Length: 157
Length: 91
Length: 111
Image (tube, rainbow over all chains, first blue to last red; front, top):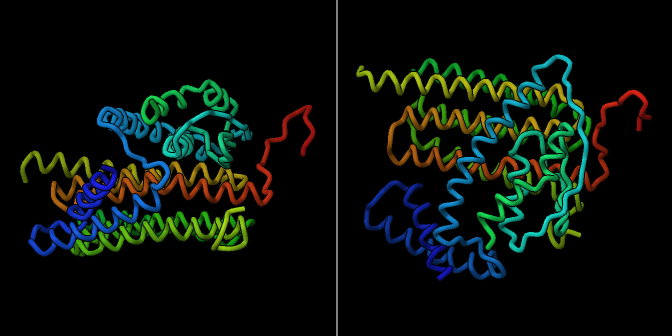
């Protein structure tokens, strides 16, 4: 089942890259995606495949839209700080512990922290995330665990 | 529209050269790698812009591979900085 | 030139301009900010938004075909890889002992 999912995803990617529907292209693409799919499911995803159910995929779509909005907010925030001649930043580093069961949620959490305003993931060791913040208010928003719950709603359960 | 795209491409190239100053000045090695990574992202966008200026859609594929290579180069460099080698365990 | 073309042209210029602006901010941040970690903030966020906005503008300009899908895929690639490479570098810096810069405050000893 995982193999079928991986092959279909890779095949769609192939179709986008070639943009051609000639029989030979379709056939070569199918063979290559199947071969890569076998390799990926045997080695990369041997322990925990980053697959999602249909409901989770729907939530992921909503989540990505929210994340894009947050990235724009983050960039505007950094722009304000950089363009201000006094550069009013007070960086600090904090540790945050959270309990995810899947690798894919850890990756999503780390990358989301980096892309949301004022925070940057520095280190991940087991469940402890070391986070660099540009100001103290962002440290509070991480500690409140709102982002963590959003990620858990998409990838866990 | 082609003139506008040229303008944006040249603007990004000027930016890329400014970023190279950070690669020259440092002060740490990670600063240099970071600035090279940013120059790579800018180059990727310039390649996509030029694919419209010259009307060659091949440049888009080149940009794609450039993005992938840029990512792998940064990962390899940071891993080398952290562990001192490229193969084997992380610890 | 139909009205629809004019709207698409205007949107292209607006998004491309925004993208160029955020690239400029990323560059300035890289040059101005005090230490590596805060520079990474500027690099990851501003570059992601700059590249995403410019690529979106070009996809709009191109219209709906295979090339546009490819450009959107490149934007997704940047969205995924830019924070990851920033994180990899920050982790290398942190584990090799680079101490983050702190603002010196009154009543607090500089470290």
